[in-house]
Amino acid sequence: MSERAEWMTQNWTSGKLNALVKAIGEETATKILKSRWKVVEKDRTITLERILEPLFDKNGRRIPENLSANVCDANEDFRLNQLNLKDEVDYANRILRLHGCLSVDTKVTAQRLKGKTEHLLALIRNNSQIANVLNGVWLPVVLPQLITDDLGTILEQYLEGAGKSYIKTFSDRKFYNHRKNTLANNVSTTDGSRQDQLVERMKQGPVIGVYFSNPLQGFSIDASREQMSTLPREFILSGLDIAIAMVMYPDILARDWNTPGLDLAALSWQSSACSLCFGAYDALLDFGRTDNLADADDDCSGGLLFLG
Image: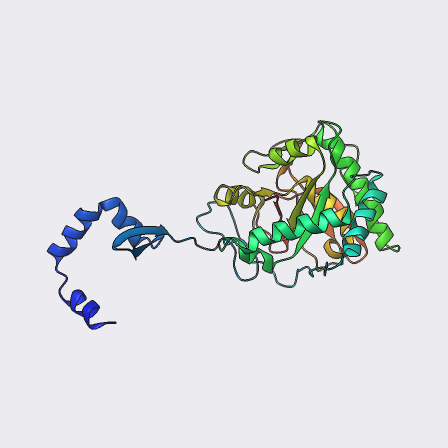
């Protein structure tokens, strides 16, 4: 501490403090005390700058602050491994898998997917509030243009493609869709998830985004939905995009028993009390209904889609 600063500290009286609060206003003083603002002096002008607290921790997990819904610590035994995507051929192989297993042609090239992914990652790196999310597993995804308004029918098609992709990767395993023939006209987006914004964009054409698979590990589905209110608008709570990611990356997302369960927290099935999830095991992958939406499981996670 400088001699001048020490002198000022020693000479602060309650009267001076009260005068300072009166001068800057109680609201400004409260902001400073809550450590969400800092005082900046430049060119003899004093201003307040908002301090942007990180929204994700050093492991890429969402920091669960001020949530009323249930959250527990993530079980580190359940984890995913980051895929090394470097060359266009790496992206091309994933696009070909998507097209082949879904019988679609998005017209998205490897060059376009790689370029868009790098752009989105740069946006994240340059934002100190969200940069830590990159410490978790991220995967580029291509969501095909929607050709029907019924999300259940679309999800059914995506699950069929996910099953084909999974068995293609693990020829000695099985995929079980426990909700088969029950999804049409029974799936909807949840309020506040922003999944409806994704749906609207998909109606216009293919959408490229970066999927973060387990930043919400240990969050109940209720908590996954609740935390969206404090995330930047570029993030969407994952739903349909998880099924697409499973088509493109079953080797990453359904590797074995020790991969986290994946909650489609942005979607409801049949009623607001039910949602859907993927569960991977050593010998199979299944898809079904989640447990109680209020339960926090240390081996399950909702996902986030970043669209920029």
